Image 1 (cartoon, rainbow, N blue to C red):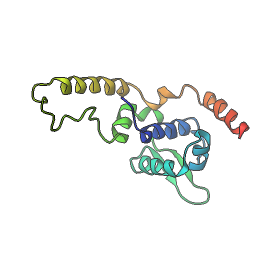
Image 2: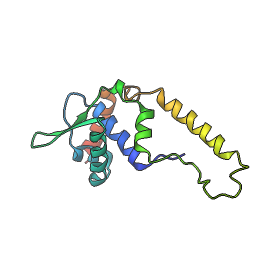
Image 3: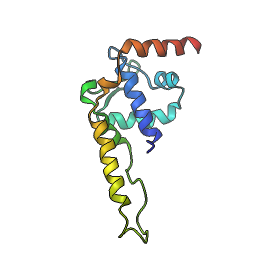
Image 4: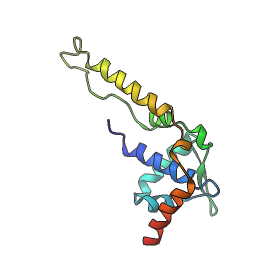
Length: 143
């Protein structure tokens, strides 16, 4: 199973903000840190703000920050929110679908996958904000 870039970028934004709980960050800053498109990131940030995962403050002294405590951001819920659907195979119109058990097995596997993600929150992903600062600090020095 491969998650979409939208989910990947959503996780990256949340990780970046979790590592900087004491300040507002900009979309441009996050995009530079990861080397990803600022335009694509704006769509992700918009969605995360509309869903309450982050707060977005407009204006000259604005920026983004987590909208919830890291312990309240469940990874399974986030993946369910950011992924469009979980149809691992397209069985609609398949002539063997009535006799095939693959759909049921894949649904079971998906439940297991999401069940593991449900056991973790954002706080579990950020071992130490200092570790992230060291990594991003090295990247900022090179640029």
